[in-house]
Amino acid sequence: MGAGHAHPLYLDRGGRVHRLAPEVKIMAVLLFTIVVVLTPPTSYPAFAGYFVLVAALAVVARVPALWLLKRATIELPFVLLAIALPIVGHGERVQWLGMSLSVDGLHGAWNIFAKGTLGVLASLLLAATTTMRDLLLGLDRLRVPAVFTQIATFMLRYLDVLADDARRMRIARLSRGYDPRFLWQVKAFAVGVGSLFLRSYERGERVYLAMVSRGYTGRLPSPNDRRAPAGEWAAAATLPLISLGIAVLA
Image 1: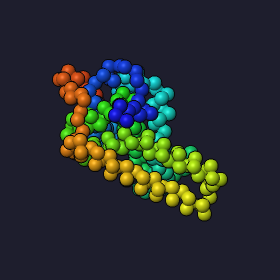
Image 2: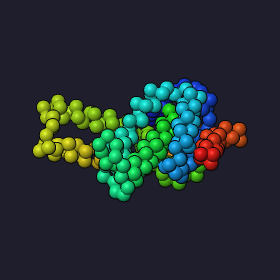
Image 3: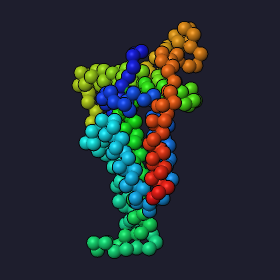
Image 4: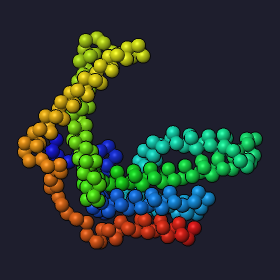
């Protein structure tokens, strides 16, 4: 469990973007997202430029477009909400295909769709080019409170263990001929969740005591303390700088 962990969204392509330090990629995506959020929803050329910029970054990072589109469907609930806004919105209305649509609702729907999609695509590119361990290391280098990074580190290390415990408990339940499928059988599921929580809590206590006895002081040692050189910061800064230029020109 001490080895590095990858997540399902990571693509090991070995490109130039992959080799950048995690903290510079996190900052680049964060600043790009801020520029996108602050862009007025009626600045349509700016959003077109942002999409072109994200597409160019995906090409440089060697992340397939189909891979991005499949995983971007996570925002589908928000897209459905955006579709409903023109119908239920108030204010000035326009007629389109026999439907009365709110102008403010149309602007709101476009705002949610455009900014949400750009944010999801940027986050997916960050996840595709950075392992989960490097993401946590980058957050730690950016001075994110240690309590958050340490909790996330432990969660990452023991998530597979907890999933395996839940799988074994389910197999044990099925081997005894009990497979709850209906609402009135939810008691078995609730008991299983409670048992898994207690076992996880007890394991966490044992692990913490073992770590303290070995000198743990609240921060895990980092095997690689390489700081990002100025060149990597400059390379990563091209994303927010170009997006800012697009916003200003648009």
